[in-house]
Each structure stands twice: as structure tokens, then as C-alpha cells.
Length: 127
View (spheres, rainbow, N blue to C red):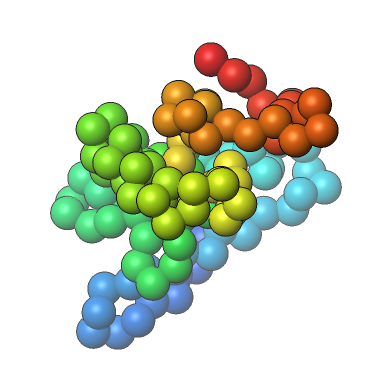
């Protein structure tokens, strides 16, 4: 993969528990390297899931892995996870826009709040 993307990678890991932390080395000042680094990371994560691993170990999903959740979970799994999150975060204040790849789900679940005539995150597409 390193040759394919033209980037170096070093791996840090937890001996004994299987957590892998690939560190993809790139220069953000070189046009295209950031995009190649992101594609490289996505391919590593897809391979991890394919061979029985998971997207995350002790770290969260956040923004970096959000769009890859579909490689590990189907639509029903993601919908159920969103229901659980909504039960603990009914106002959608905790990490909005993170973890779940389809950001319009809050609206579908009836959790889109209009405050002073403004919807949250107006720049995000609504389906």
C-alpha cells in the first residue's frame, strides 16, 4: 500500500492486544498528498475489517472514520446506534456531525432543533 500511494507509513501498535496505529507520513504542503494519505488510511481500515478487525480500538470514530462506518455496520446497525445516542443525547449536543456517516438522520428522528430561526449546521446538506 505504501508503494501504491507513494507515501511512507510506520506502524505503532499495542503488543498483545492487536491495536494497530498506522502513521501515514505526508506533507500537507504538497498538492495531493493529504488526499492520498486519507485514501491510504481508508484502505488500511477496510482491510482491517475484511480480516475480522474493527475500525477502532480504544479510540473513537470521530470524523476521520465516520464515512467508513458502512464497511463494518449495515444500515440497520447504524440506525440502532443512532437511536441509542438519541436516548442519551436528545438535543444532539454531544459531538454533532461525528460518528454517524449520514448527518441527516437527526432530522429524520425528529431531533432537528431550530433556535432563533436558525437550524444547526446550515452548511450541511439535508436530504
